[in-house]
Length: 321
Image (cartoon, rainbow, N blue to C red; front, side, top):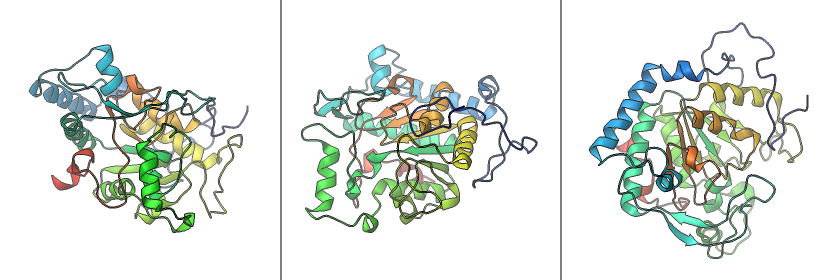
């Protein structure tokens, strides 16, 4: 069979190799594989039941769930009656990722009060999770001065952040600083909330923010890493990292996809699996093809290097412990 590349393929033979080890998830690449995914078993998991009960409590106390198709598309399956539709802040008729499962490159932002409500719900989801995986794309690094492929709208908020922090200088990519997003994810890991980071970027800003390498899967390669060089789009993924990703595909009980177009890459598999289990959160300025499958959908400007918007970050969970 054809080896898996960064582009979308059907991953095969993830169960090959030593299969007699236990079904626990550990932090490093040598973690034992789990059994095949069993969604029906997950639905009976007491922790999942507790989280679902929590969803109902949130919905009831906030005025009820909004299950209209429009609300499902903009806010996810946990939408609450009264949440406002995101505002378009940069319009574009171009596709954000031509050749993939592409969407328009327009950018949107949630209304302040709606965003605050979503942050509270997300904080509870993270606290209830035992195997939270963060899945990130180029969008979390634009504020550090690194451009991305998808931001094409005139007046793009993402590009404004990038140019603001680049200050007109051509910075050495190895000297760039991590954004607030990187620091926040690392802080959540130190608190025990984030157990794994599936990283599409090559920039190594996650390590600069203090995230441990043992919990970081740089699935598409990394700058200045001879053992994990940056891959071209038609190259196959490193087998051990592919298998590691496959184990999180089966075991993650929450996936937070940040700054990624979710356009059909092989690495989207963890987000896709969590969407099927009702455990996907998407945080992105642009629409994605998976929006209607998300439990929660947030539209925010990529956090800057220094000051975050307090109402737009999940730092709430670090303040309320």
